[in-house]
Image (tube, rainbow, N blue to C red):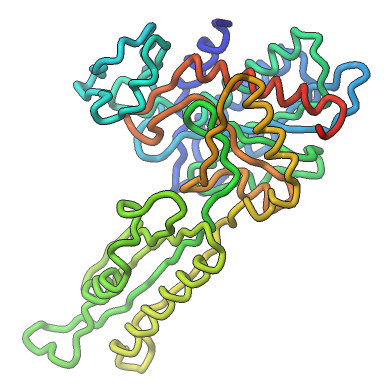
Length: 412
């Protein structure tokens, strides 16, 4: 196996690119600039053309087609940032020839097959784990390393391929959705994000997603004289949460089941705030969920009115992204060719709906069809995150095979 894949990955994860939800600019954190500039330098060294880092740390580049290849311009994308849940300044440890047992992290946490049974399938492989007090950042620096290594191998090969574009984008973890990528200037006909998990995974459906921000205005008065006068905003917030279906939360659903997720709750007697995520793969069920939450708020406003007659509860609904499956169904070759590439590389495709979002969801809605391929990471967004080097190498092979399949047009 080419050691450059591992070396790249270790280099990238040591850079803290943790996204900042409170950030007021794009990118939201300075480490994303550091990684963006490093990647641009490496792309130039590989010999790619039109290497650019724009004012928002979007890195773009182009690998020209081989002589005689006349296929469409395809693209590979990954994101620079890591999740907000923990520090992104990883101190990675490499475990060669994994024996299938417990892995003691530096903090004393155990990465154990009893808790994570998929580890039993990694025996004999090379794992990269965290120290236990940070993320590893395989989401999505494994994807970045995979793309960079695929580009390197294509540059060193005589294998035919059409134009291959690349973009590394900021702030995916806080819902930015690559929204500042200039698609006309980028010039891709279709793309693949390399941001999935286990070996052979292909994802081309996501949730439909919205966020509800609920503001509650209460009436604070001395509790000894409060009868008929006080409106306790905390209790109103509790009533809203109690009205949500208890069996439709992230902890009680799987597969294509949708949910309501209370993301934030804060308040005092005179004011409270709730944020609720609404998710569903089915468009009609998604709209019904939004209507249901509106009905809950309307019911609360029948029960609680302010002294001047105004409703106590205000609901703001913000659509975030749509199920990219409805857009990808219009260009079936993008998914069909990915399935063929996986099988050509000896992998059995694992197709499942994403219980979340990807940059590809926003990009597909904007006109750039963009399913999601695996990158070899596991257990993202926490200290138990790890990457499997052999799976990352398989992802490299899949990207190269995709480029080869599209060398002379859309495959039959």
